[in-house]
Length: 179
Image (cartoon, rainbow, N blue to C red; front, side, top):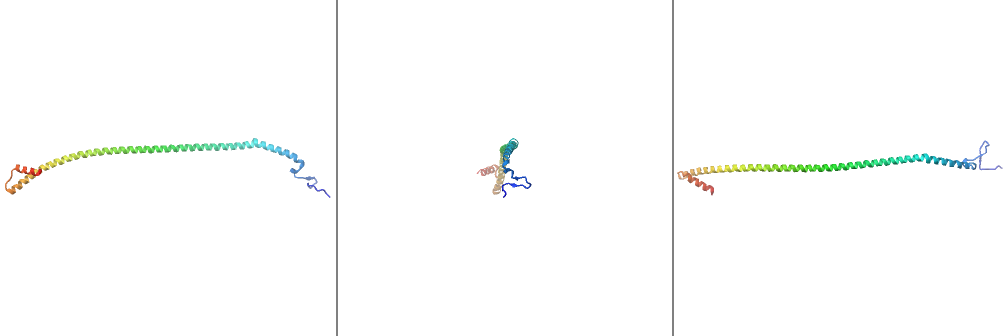
């Protein structure tokens, strides 16, 4: 009988072949090449790839920090501008109220002056009118006395048939007007 082994034979008579990583004869050299590849990969990563990635990450952090700082600066500027706007608006309102109060006081003063001037003018005209009325009343009273004396003389003459004296008629009219 033939011996059985765990190796498979390859047709063509070259002997048994196993999967190279599992071959005991090449295991040592495979470990050496694994260490060499690992060290080479570690050196490449630590000296070339990782610094590049680190610099890219740092550049991104710096850019983000710069953008945030600029955004904060713009925010502060806009808040300062808003505060200045609100202050200017409040100042303008205050000035407008002061101007309105000043104008109102000025107009009230002018109206008071005009009212006093008009009252003085009307008082003067009233005094003149009262003088005119008094003069007209006095002349009317004198005319009434004359008319009353003439009428009294005419009435007495008709009643008694003779004309009374002017002095007696005037005295009678004066007593009637006083009493």
